[in-house]
Image 1 (cartoon, rainbow, N blue to C red):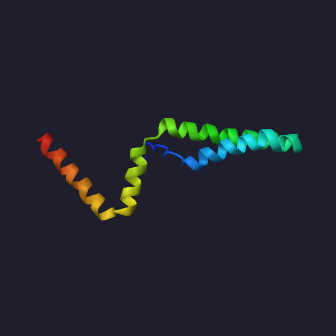
Image 2: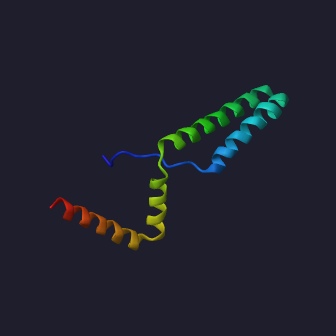
Image 3: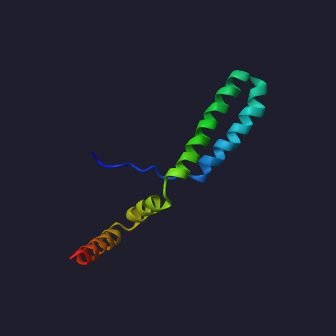
Length: 92
């Protein structure tokens, strides 16, 4: 097994899209065609719930660590190795 997978935080654009999409679907599209309005409202509601779960369960540290690792792979690896060495020294 690869280990526990932690969800990364979804973007604020995803959250904003879900909120605006829900209101547009509920108030505008529903008046035109109730079936499509209901369907889109449910879809955007699911998107909103996903973004709330993502905010509650993820840590910004994991996303930031991944971005740093992609931007500065050599420096990040060296820094990580130094931390591991210092932890080993403390244990001895």
